[in-house]
Length: 452
Image 1 (cartoon, helix red, strand yellow):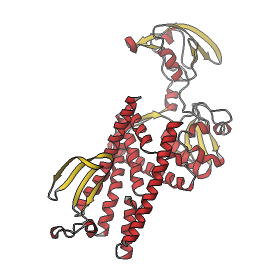
Image 2 (cartoon, rainbow, N blue to C red; image 1 turned 30 degrees about the vertical axis):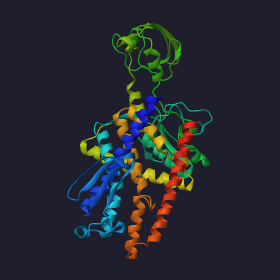
Image 3 (cartoon, rainbow, N blue to C red; image 1 turned 90 degrees about the vertical axis):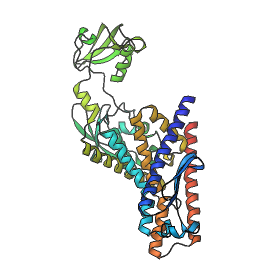
Image 4 (cartoon, rainbow, N blue to C red; image 1 turned 120 degrees about the vertical axis):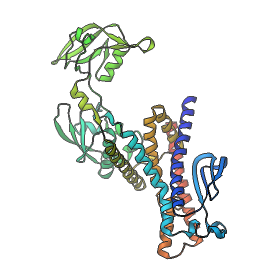
């Protein structure tokens, strides 16, 4: 338990530090290109634990004690007198388009990081589970729609989907918009049929974290325990099993799915077991001695069979990309998730999507720890998602965020002069209140998940 907490805390600090550094570097570098003087570039808040000064502007670069944010401080005539040598280099003395560019640069760099992260992840290609349904709960939305265990989702609302991620995004979009999800399904033999999930006015409830699969009555599918090719000198071939046989039990343990079969066989290396199977609808049983692989504690039982090629094609996907192709796909991935994030935020405001989806630092830390434990690729994917969320959040028209400051600059451009100090103070107060409200929801959701 303590180890998991430390992993989550460390992963969270690394994630926030990296993404904040990228965000603030966007402000910093574009500010310098725009001719502004940078006084401080800080990762974290509070007292500096490390700092140094460098460059012709004697900019202070520091890492502060509280790793939950960061900032770039530009020279600004509203905060004090500007030295004659620095006239025209203060933030508020630069042209409005330059100021807007600096404010927009932080979120932009978050989106660019996501593109880069997805590009790196997509370069070797993609492999994973296709959107195939698992067991269907009786009298569920999926059951009433006529969906079956082993059906593959080919399209949602006539938009093709190839993996679970794109399928879930499309299902959520369609469900929240209309309460219905038109599906094009395909069975393992290639036959296609149409079905519609009709959730009526329950869409908001089903958008609560972890509620979608159980609420719809579906699971993630996996191949059935059907014999494909048998290996030479393997236990299956010696026992007379052949392609197309469906194994129903090993040593008395039911084996409906391929995962069940692997689990049952893996724990019995070298042992003689009874294998029950179906062939052409008739039930048979054979006693055979399992093979084995590995040594010591890593010994695993082997039956000597492979999945049928048709099952591999139906339940899994594999994509290869050229270097430019991976980059284009990374842009598409970032755009798709950005649009989805914006739409979901908007629908939280209207009440169409549950506000329980708002996560605070506790939940993000848990996700960070889980992703870090699953490997560097999963952690990089997690960073990409959070980076997109950070970019979208900072573009909201809330005065204390980049988006709100951009609104102030646009208002100044239209008005011909800066907003009054009173107007800016009122705007800041509204922004702080909005952020406190958002943070309250986030912390409440975090604590509620822990207590569940």
